[in-house]
Structures are given as C-alpha cells and as structure tokens.
Image: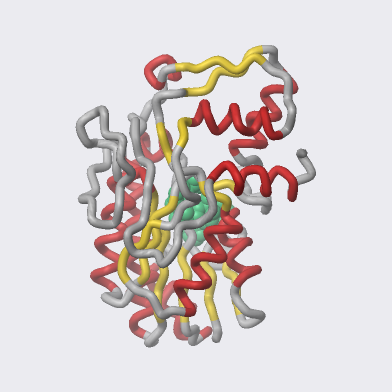
Length: 282
Ligand SMILES: NC(=O)c1ccc[n+]([C@@H]2O[C@H](COP(=O)([O-])OP(=O)(O)OC[C@H]3O[C@@H](n4cnc5c(N)ncnc54)[C@H](OP(=O)(O)O)[C@@H]3O)[C@@H](O)[C@H]2O)c1
C-alpha cells in the first residue's frame, strides 16, 4: 500500500514514516509546499498513493496570531489542496488537527472534549485548524481527521526540542523553572499516536477521531512528572497564563477523549516514562 507522507521531516511525520510499510514516500517542505495547489495535485498524480497523510502545519501559536494569512494558507487552504488532490486520484486522505479547536467554552469545564463537542477556538491557530477540518471534509468526504494534543516524540524536528527536553534544559540552566498551571491538555507521545493512526488506516476509518494518551494534566504537572521521572532537582513554580504574557490566548482546558476509538491509548504518564527511557533520560 503506497502512502504519501507530506511533512515527512516533522516530529510526527518521522514516526509515521516508520510505522507505514516500506512503500511510504516522504515529502519534506522543500520537496512540496502545500500552499501550492498545482504542485500538490502533480505530486498526487505522480505518486498514485493509496493514502495521503498531511502532517504539515504552521503551528507556532503566537506567530499564527501575528500572521493569520499564513496560518490559513497552510492549515486551511493547504489542507484543502491535499485532501482534494488525494480524492482526485482516488486516494484516502488523513489530516491532523488539534485540541486548540477547543478552549473558548465557559471557564470551569473539566470533562474532556469528545468528537461530539462543537469546536470553539479562541486563537487564530485554532480557527485555522477548524477551517482546515471543514475544508478537508469538503475536499474529500471520505477523509480521516485526527485531533491530538501536546505532541512530543523521539525524532528531532526543525523545532529542535520537545516540551520535556525544554524543561530539562531549563532545569540545567536556571535555579527556578516556572510553568503555567492553568492550561490543561492531554499530552501525547507521537510513537503511540503513529501506531494508533496505523490501526485506523488498516480499519479503513474515516471521519473525525480524537487520538491522545489517556488522561489530562496542566503544563505544570507535565513538567513536574518529567522532573520526577528523571530525578531532576530543580525548584518548579506554577505560573498563570496571564503572567506568561503571550500574544495569543491559550485554551484553559483542551483535554481530549474519544468515544470512537475501540480502546484508549495508555495513560500519558506511562507514555512519558517510556519516552524518557527511549531518549536515555532516565
Ligand atoms: N505539536 C503539537 O503539540 C501538536 C498538537 C496537536 C496537533 N498537532 C498537529 O499535528 C501535526 C504534526 O505536528 P508536528 O508537531 O509533527 O509538527 P512539526 O514537527 O512542525 O512538523 C510539521 C512539518 O510540516 C512542514 N511544513 C510546514 N509548513 C509547510 C508547508 N507550507 N508545506 C509543506 N510542509 C510544511 C514542516 O517543515 P519545516 O519545519 O521545514 O517548515 C514540518 O516538517 C500538525 O498538523 C499539527 O497541527 C500538533
């Protein structure tokens, strides 16, 4: 089964290249820009894949707020280009979306968002991904759309670090590490996500799925678990989102759960421990 992976050098893209069969063809940003609809169509026609997986995104949340045109160009129109091109050559298409499509609900929500919940984004990144989801479903009615959250993986992407790596780097450089404790998410190990994606592809799944490691935590709790699992001595202090003073608003609660997956993925803390072991950090 020939699978075209667009965004193959990203952190998730690299894990997906590993889990799909030897027939995977990876295209990097240099090979193909998803905002170029003609080039995307030509790539689909040249490779004749059975699946087209689009992992691309412009996802630096504050930069999206400053540059909504680029956010929409990559995350919405680019996504549409890929889904439509896939459908035109009879291929299945897979688009990744985000927990940031949520967050605009009244404060105080404490039950994870399922596939049945209506999106309510509160920043440009989230809005561009909701638009991407809609356009993908329009361009390819059989598309598979997977929302995930707080990704970290063993592959190094251009971003250069994962959240746990950043925390350990900060802990080695400073006495006090401050992390926001009023944003709750479902951190997810890309190895687990990629394996679940493979299962969904094998099942010929379509429509919307939430795929995250089970459970939820704040970024502060995510950092605390990282320090505990690596036996790192550092003073960790909670910080408010307001004090962090970022350009784009952040969802206070964007944890995800699925009512569609056959079985939940393992708990986020187990996945984090495994990740840290694989990276030789514990
Ligand atoms: N990271 C998270 O915490 C998170 C959470 C939830 C959902 N997601 C979603 O999961 C997917 C994968 O995320 P990730 O963390 O693996 O991201 P990533 O490491 O940044 O990978 C994205 C890849 O897309 C490429 N790309 C960016 N713009 C492009 C364009 N216009 N045309 C072609 N390629 C382009 C990037 O290349 P360059 O780096 O060379 O530009 C990069 O290799 C994204 O759809 C993202 O929205 C991510």
